[in-house]
Image (tube, rainbow, N blue to C red; front, side, top):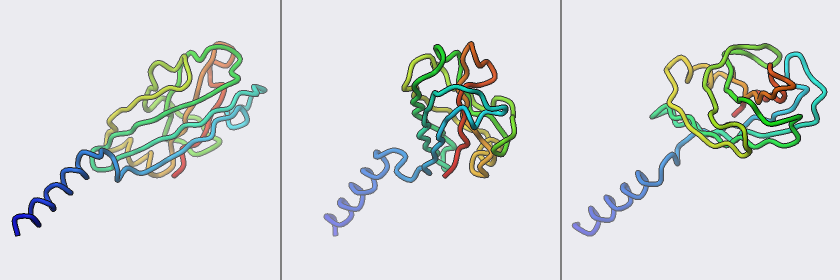
Length: 139
């Protein structure tokens, strides 16, 4: 019996230490035609996003290439459906160099908007201060 209890505890500890194994996976494909209004940039990018509903932790890796100049900022914007603009919901610090990794803890309202598909990722440049590439966050 002691071996069974120990094995159960060891398994539980390994699951706990594994981190956000139960995180929901999201993605955004970034391009200029998704901007509102669209622009002529040939840049592209992706955002690989994990969200842990238990802790409300949002983590991301944003990768981009081909921008007209250095990225001046990047954000999660919302709430907005594709084709609509919204304010900054979550900043993505240190966006000047790809890839950009980071995390934030969401509020209840932000978590609701994210899981409802009402966030998009936007990368801004000097030539396109409103956003050069954008992609809607989807599960």
